[in-house]
Image 1 (cartoon, rainbow, N blue to C red):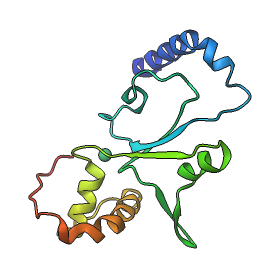
Image 2: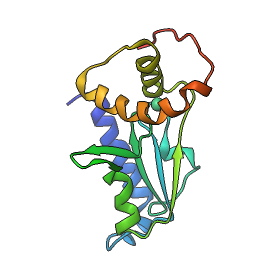
Image 3: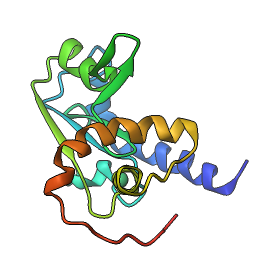
Length: 149
Ligand SMILES: [Zn+2]
């Protein structure tokens, strides 16, 4: 097993040990106060972003570009990852967290302004961002982006 994975398991053991009191109370269900949707970018750490909140307070979801919609055969809908806590856990507040230098948003911008495409699975995600970004594109300043992949 890779050392990176072994260290993660050790960290999880420490997490379970230090959170034993609060985790036990959550075995029967959850009622998080807040849903946060953030980018999966490795520089954006949702777990530490809000100080050290105890388990059960924040339902978190991450994806590239902090998207909240998904494409279905019936059209664009609120993503199931976002809808689930609202429908099934009583969460009433959603906070979408963007960040500086988002690669997915940059890819959507470049796709719209320069026609640059990516691999199909990534392209699907970028297209969803493009739909929202294109509405504001005319009001954004034209910027020159360097390629950082
Ligand atoms: Zn990002």
